[in-house]
Image 1 (cartoon, rainbow, N blue to C red):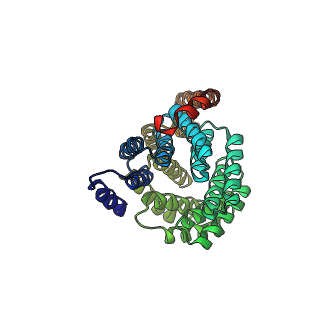
Image 2 (image 1 turned 90 degrees about the horizontal axis):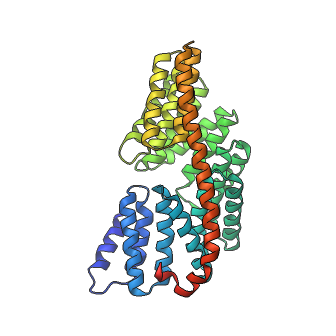
Amino acid sequence: MQSLEERIAELRSTPIPSTGLVDALNAMALELWRVDLLRALATVREARTLSRLLSYHKGAITGLARLSWIHLQIGEFDTAVREAHETQFFAEQAGDYVLILNALYTITHAYQMAQDFKRAEASWQKMLNLAQTHGDQLRKADYWLSLGLLYLDTGRYQRALDLTLRAKELYTTLNDATLALAINNAAFALAYLGRNTEALTWAEDALARCDPEQSIWRAEFLNTIGVIRLNQEEYGLARACLDESLALSLAPGGRKMDAAITLMDMAKLELAQKNMPAAFNALERATLVAGEAQSHALEAKAQNAIAKLYVLAHDWNGADYYHDRYMGHKYRVGIDRVEKEVILIRVAAEVNSQHQVWERHGPLSL
């Protein structure tokens, strides 16, 4: 990222802006979205403004692709889906398959956020076919990995493992850093399949390969090892890994959603050691952190777990109270899913009616 910042500073120092500056700004926006969404948003807006001034079509379409992804990350679902469809239209007109894939990437994640897993799966397959047609091995590996994650999330663990192993082989051949993530995901699938000894070997390998600066990945990998150690009833080792994972997820640059998941795993650890008060405490913290992450799904999961703990403690009033809270969050999750599905349908209809307008005005008008 530092070299990109230096390049942008150098390009800004010239009297007349260039398309090279637009490309550098779009590249910087892609680097920034994981660490600073607001700065990423400002960067891509600058790139789009310059694209219009320079009549630089590819820069404008690339900026629109970046903008749609960032809007999806900050919760502007409607805007993100519309911009992704616009990107796809102009990318197809330009015959730029990379930008087509960028647009489909956002649309596919939108399907998953709406829990429309059937369409998401079909979209990943479409992207895989495009990557295969263009001999793009790295993107093929990326899409296998993403489809494997979809199968993990929907409980199809053997299929998840099979695709993740395919991705791992390609990343190995390409010597790509994402290999560590693929190895971790394979370990997670193996753990769900009950193959904990194999899973531990893989997860420890992933952690050993992880760049210390990649705090989000490191937190994930430590959580995987902690869960496997818990499955193996190695409670001290499990606690050490989960504690470190939690600290990384709660630190600046970490992800609170990951912290909430780790806290729920810590509650399982406490319960396995018959430490009921500590289990309650971990789940209460998970609820708070999930709320800060604005995840009704994780809040629902934590509230449901607390209700079950109260049942174990024979506290029926507590169980009823937390079950009601769980149902409230579960209802909100259902409403959110329906709202997103409606947006997807509405935007698809709007897009069809906009094609002639886009053809007439082009990408620089957006």
